[in-house]
View (cartoon, helix red, strand yellow):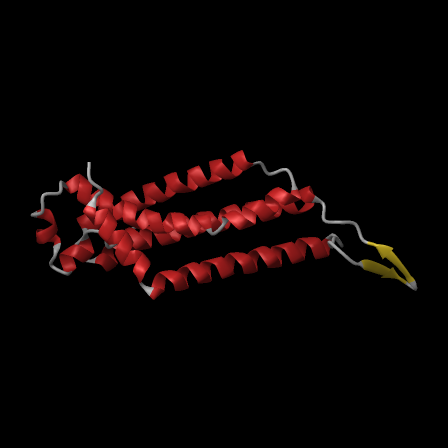
Length: 193
């Protein structure tokens, strides 16, 4: 079996432009900002810092280190919710034009008349957009690694979260592609999705 040409073309088109780099950078910086603000608010509220001393009058008393469980639950929940929001908002937007944009550009007839089956065309378009989504999901791995260092989060937990996100992304992409095939205009498909 050869690699799906629609998939290869979609990945090349998606990854070549500066828009991809900008979107990935903005997403990473957003994750970093939210992660940092959450850490500071939780650590500051509990008077936990990695280094330093507290001054009580004229005495300097060492502060305790960050306790893993104190930070783990809210930061883990916030990170998972943030990634889930990314999947629920970005994946339908990326896939809403899979078929309808081909119809708008009047290239759908050319695509259908190729030797590719309808399933291979649709799977190629969906998987090309999911590949980009997987890149965005991978940008969250350093934050999970930091939580792993704090303790109590296991690699299996991260693997299960990522598996859930991939399945959710595939379901959202499939629904968006369905509406893209149903509607003549991409904007209408995006609204329905």
